[in-house]
Image (cartoon, rainbow, N blue to C red):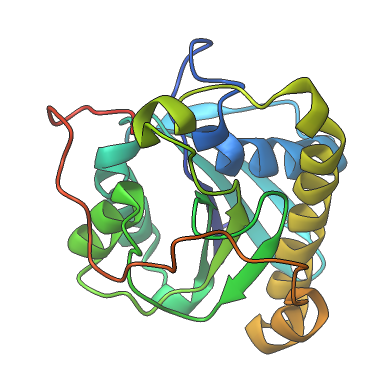
Length: 212
C-alpha cells in the first residue's frame, strides 16, 4: 500500500513539548490517528509515520523528529522517497497571526515568520503546497516563551474544538481538494490576531535544533 498523500503536523518531539502551543500540528495529526484507530507508528526519515487507507487514498501521517526549525529535512526526505508531488502534501501548524482557535486553509503561501514552515520551503524548494493554519493568538510578550508554553485551562475547550475541526478539514482536503476545504472551513473569525501577518521570516533564535 504505497502512500499517495502525506499529512504533516509540525511540532517538537518529546513530553516536554507535547502540550505546548507550538505542537498543535502534532495534536491534529494525533486526532486523525485517533479517529482512524491507528495503533502502529514507526520511525522513517527522521519522523514518526503511520499509514491509513482513507476513502480512495493511502495517507501517510507524519510527525517530524527534527525539532521545529529543521522540519524540512524530515519532510523533504519522505516526500522524495515517495515521489509525491507537492499538491499531495498537506502541512498543519500553529499560527500566531490568527486569533486563538481559528482555522485558515491555503493552497500555498510564504512561511509567515514560522520557522518550521521556513525550513519546509527551503528544503522543498517551493512554497506551493497546501497548508492548514491553526490560530494560537498573538503572544502578549515573549514569543518563544508563549509558543513553548501549554494552553491555559480556560483555552482547552476551544482548542480541542479547533483540533477536531482541523482534522475534519484535512479529511475534506484529501477527499475533495483544497478549494472544497477552503470553502467549508475558511470562515471569518470575530477578530484577527494582531499585529498583521508578516510575510518575512524571523531570524533564528538559536542553534540548528531549535524548538521555536
